[in-house]
Structure formats: C-alpha cells, structure tokens
Length: 298
Image (tube, rainbow, N blue to C red; front, top):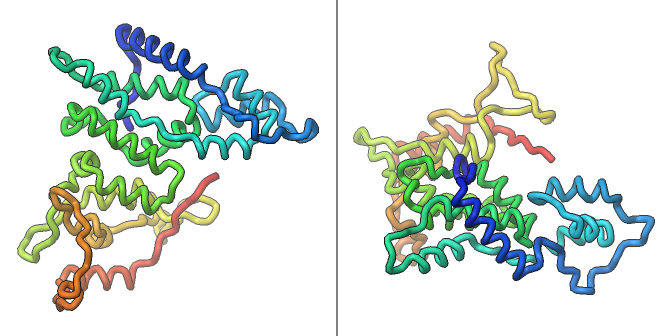
C-alpha cells in the first residue's frame, strides 16, 4: 500500500505509544500462547537462538526474547501452525472505535488513524505472520492514499487492507476475486462502472486488466525456468501480454456500480446469445498467442 505507512508526527507517535501501551497491558505484549499443549522438541532438535531469530525476522515484524525462546522450544512448524490458528484483528475495528469517539465533535478519522492501527498491530499484535503476509500482499495488490479518489476514504481503504489479511493464508483465486470486487480497487484502477466494447467506437478501460496480468500475476516479460527473461530474435525481452489479450480480459468486459453474481435460471441458460466480434477476436487470440510462464520464487 504505497505511501500509506510512513513517518509519524509527534502527535501521532504519542497516540501510538498510548495505544501500544494499552495493548501491551491487556495482552502482555506480543508473545506466543503455548496453552500447555504444544509439545517441546528434544534438546538435540531445537534450533539455535540465532536461527530462531532469523526465522522470526523473516516471518514477523520483529522478534523478542519470548518468541525466540518459544520457537527454540517448539520449532518452526509449531509456530507457523499456531499463527495460522490465531484470529485476525481487523483494523476497521480501531477506525470504527475512533469514529465513535468523535461523535458530537468536529473531529473525524484520518489517514493517521489507519497508520496508528497498522503500527500497533505490527509492533505488538499476536497474529504476526498474518501481519507480515498482509503487508507483503499490499505491495503487490497496491492501493494508495496518495490517490485523490482514495485520500479521504479512510474506512474504505482500511477495509481493503483487512481484506488482504483475511485472504493472507488462502488461495490466489479467491484473493484476486475479492480484490477485483472491492470498491476501493474499482476506484483506484478505474474498473468501477467500466463499460465493455459496444462495436460502435467505445472501447473498455484496460487499466485493471493490464494490472492483473502485469502486476498481480504473470509480470511484464516471459521468463525462463531460471528466472531470466526470454528474448526475441532482436535480443529484446518478450512481453507477456498484448493489447489484444488485455482487451480480452474479463476485467475489460465491464464492472457495474454494484457487482453482483445472479444465480442462473432455466430461462437464462436457454437463451441463445450471438457471439460478438470482440468475442471472436478474443477466441482467436487465445488460440494463437503462446502462453506465458509465471515466475515463482521461494
């Protein structure tokens, strides 16, 4: 989420300190709840403190002595399983609480309140793996308060960030659908109320379709299995998409103001539809365009 999480001013830092102190007091700080039923590893199989700290540096926003000790005693897999079972703490709960506290005043929630909630959870939240995964997803499925369409939509952007957290441990298909249908993404990448081609000169907005393919999935260029770019005869990288393929994306077919998925009926199933010229071009493109490989990294 570009430019959403930046440096805090003195007032915001003071408020954050109070929030963090309250959470620490209530929860005892960010630590693992062993519950007494997680078996400990034999001494010979326990990771070192250094290895445990390195693991937690990759999987959280920072380890402390308690979490390092927990990982040493119970192991990596047990820690991951415990994190997967830890409920999500939505940021919208904090935004709603702040909004309720402002009722009857001239104050209102601002971008700083989202940042306060982010830093409080990043610093002392128990669902550290989800927090770290959510932040990573926000760097791919990007929204930004810097966009004029979103700068004042505090709860909307916050709910989008929560959506990434909800799907942080799920599958890509469900995540992409949820992102696509979220109103904030519709505003940010201009897919909201996008209209499909009508054959009379109107063409769809390809912005979101392009981002799905170039940013959210296969990337800009075709890759070899070792991650190096494939090159054409002129030595230039092969692009993964073309204008034709972007226009064939379902994201270019149009998005209503309120996306819905009506249940099919016998009448609708029996209706004969005449294929459009654009549909014919899309089928031709899919049959002639070589598939692009998607890179993956550990």
